[in-house]
Length: 355
Ligand SMILES: [Ca+2]
Ligand SMILES: [Ca+2]
Ligand SMILES: [Ca+2]
Image (cartoon, rainbow, N blue to C red; front, side, top):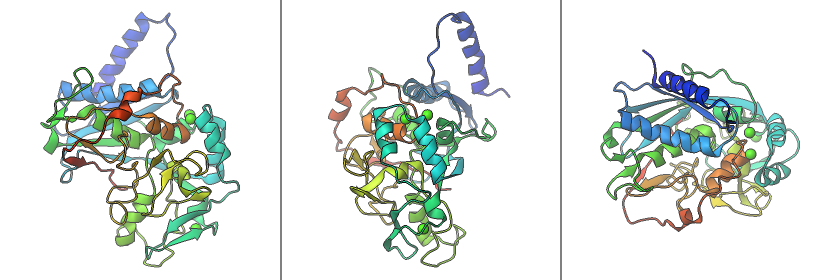
């Protein structure tokens, strides 16, 4: 059965043929494949396509990201969930890729503040939930994990295709009727959750807005499930942390990938806080660490309230910029996005499923 993506490709090819003389802007391309038991309605699919188009309008890397999408049964109060394909990389290789990929002021600041040498030094949570300065050069210091989409943004090749997608994004059947699938004048009704906002958020995770702190947080209490023993040092000899974790600071010069605490996103070695991060579902602030904090309205904060509509803010774009995406210079968000304040409406969590 042809997928929607196949049909879209055909339509796109025709459109390109008709405007072949016009120069095409470079942009990240998404191949969406609906794999749900019950296929999405045309309206639902169009909502997801709008979210993908948003990112294509902001990111100029000439790469193709394969995303399988579906509606399925998710946990209570979970709107959407993303699982990603991942790959590992030596820290020194990652640093050199980030340096080669640098285009923006954010990038140049970010790479100039990266630690030198083959091994990172950071504050990290141990198996007994204590935190220590880990500068012992073991595998968790020298190797990192990144989503395959993030790897592509850094010019690395991966084996992904529609059969082995970069990400699988699911939306909750339970909320199918609570979502608004399109915006009217940029808004959704007060009693509806903006599907486009949720889809953009989940794509943000797929693109690499993820933290290894969540895996540590989970594996502290689920050692066997994580294939680990019970030693205090059980997190030492595997890669856990991500490119985004290179910008997780708790003070100037203090890289901090511990669960809990008060880490923030910084691209100048911790001197300036762009946004606080959330710090862990189980042993942190109650929200997965793969998010900004709850204080400000950002796309990558951990929840969205009914009636709210927003896209990536400057902070969200800066994070993706720093980890290897090329952000369009024209993509500076309108200042009004900062004026949105948390409403009193009940928040609904969203979840990045663990590996
Ligand atoms: Ca170590
Ligand atoms: Ca960049
Ligand atoms: Ca790039």
